[in-house]
Amino acid sequence: MKSPITAYIGLGSNQGNRIEHLQNAVDLIFERTGTVKKISGIYETPALGFEGDDFLNACISIETRFSAEKVLAQLLEIEKDLGRKRISNDYENRTLDLDLLFYGDAIIDSENLTLPHPRLTQRKFVLEPLAEIAPKFIHPISKNSIQKLLSNTSDTSEIKRSSQTLNIPEFSFQNLSYLAIEGNIGAGKTSLATMISQDFNAKLITERFKDNPFLPKFYKDQARYGFPLEMSFLADRYQQLVEDIGQYDLFNDFVVADYDIYKSMIFARVTLNAEEISLYKRLFHIMYKDIPKPDLYIYLYQHTDRLLKNIKKRGRSYEQNIPADYLENINRGYLDFIKSQNHLQTKIIDVTDLDFISNREDYLFLLREILSA
Image 1 (cartoon, one colour):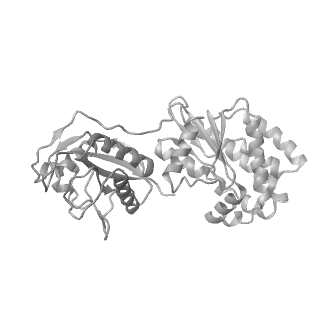
Image 2 (image 1 turned 90 degrees about the horizontal axis):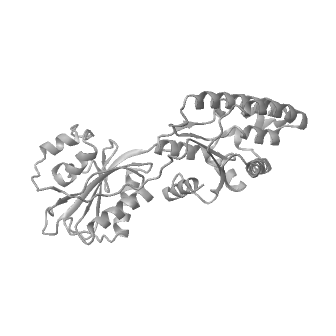
Image 3 (image 1 turned 180 degrees about the vertical axis):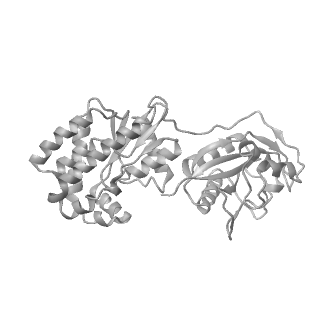
């Protein structure tokens, strides 16, 4: 999964309800492309290169996981959806103009995309709002800051700051201190937890299953290695949660984890025989009472056939022969646990038909579901 890249976008409009066009563009960029981090003020400028009405211009910064080419395609689609009709002349009246100015420090010169934007250094109506939100950003080719580029630009156009403003669309997890995201093997819990931690500056706790020496052996011989596997997982989860959560101030920090300690009991009940589970339960409940409990417990549900496809796609060799009935038993264990909870706030979200990594609209759907719990 790709980490977010900071991109800068210029917005302009000189036709119709200009403010409404700009705000609608910001909202759709948020919905389709990435998190809007900063928005400049609005600047009124004369049309450049042709006779036309004055423009309203602004710049925004976003964090996106899409490629630069994909971002450009999305911007063109947003322009079209909001009424832009392009003609052959580059200089024209327009309801909306969206320009990808920078994509991180990428330098691209292709048939469809040139980055950084080749004309931004000669456009005061771009540099002025851009300097407001990113004065120290360094142009990757000229090696000058945006503030210096503004000071040195040859464009002497009159720029007037408008009293109107644009709003940043956003989600807030301020009412949550500790979010646990659970799910079956291959449900996408680590991906979702990671995305939320990146987008909302949360402390991320991920399970350290890759370091467990019993896991590959377990998938080859469950009867022999089930008990040492579950005991090692329990010890590691307990140590990790006690140490990691102990470092955070749950009154001020936002913590998101891709597991809850109770998964140890769920997997153990599926894996262990009656004698083993009896001993395991005694040890588990001694540890369980010491672990902080999440404010919200989210379970990502997926149909078994989709889980098997996900497992095959991610390609971990020791997982490739996991039987369907094992996954179904794990799922039943989670659902039974959730039904039994009176003290823990829980929510089940069916993600079988969602692709929240590649489709931002699916990701935002999940965020809304979590925040409505």
